[in-house]
Length: 198
Image (cartoon, rainbow, N blue to C red; front, side, top):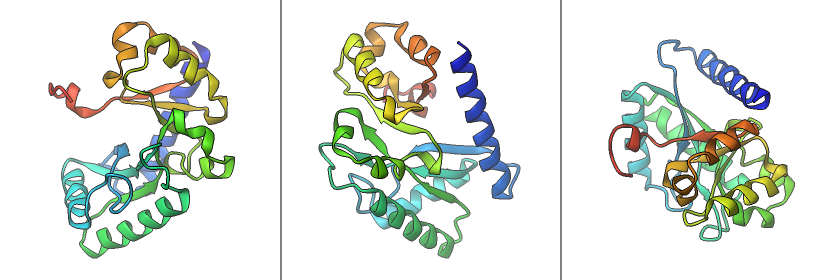
């Protein structure tokens, strides 16, 4: 329980730093899971990316972490490509008058992480923070999911991407609590909170 409290405290402090260094203290929304980079994974085209950023800005978001997939389906996503994509999109956004801070990151498929070197993993953490956003296989059962997360100590601290989409958390309603108790965090998508199915 102490680890979970410490993890939440670190995340609040990091969020506060991001908000206060941006300059606009009224807009405090940070989107940690944002597929915005054109030409990487299944992300949008350039015009669609700018439209997404405009909508995020209109909704009060001031910072997004670009999180392309790093997975067996997208094995060529590399930290240097993400960094370059962020620089390019940030410049395009500024040219279009979109006031948005864009940071690098990735959505890491746990089953694929073994093929990445330590230096590569460091460049794919959320917004140059210690946190790694990880995705479980949607079909994993609770026992396998817990084992898989426990095997990846090198990725800690972890943020579990959209647990509400994974069968494991539906099958075991105490699983997320156990993982948070171990110091992991979770990121929930807006759609289910807003009443949508996905």
